[in-house]
Image (tube, rainbow, N blue to C red; front, side, top):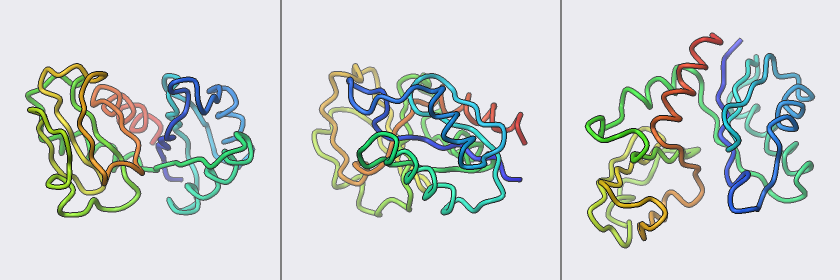
Length: 172
């Protein structure tokens, strides 16, 4: 079985998309996923499945859309891919809480960095299917940075990414 990490977009953020992590685990169990567990109440789900990444993503998005009554976006990575995201972090010199990896379903466009708007000292880099941003001391909640290519993705700080990679490795 493959260990997957599913990252839900816009769950429990700003009062929209409310979903308890207990409900998320129940949904995963109902889909036949093995050993589902969540990490912090921001839409992080770990589990095992024999299904492909595409199938897992489709099943989760359909079940969550039904449960929430609105469209749900899920980005999925294997345990090995999460470890690669941690290792590939181009901003290891910065505190993990200030560096975000935005997870995308596909490779970011080559011009994603050039198309970013309101860059005010932040450092940006492209990954395989991620966009990394080091906020360089800017308060995350006050940053004006807009990255159009990241709009369909979901971001996690590198502390969270590292913990998810560790938990996924333990499940393998």
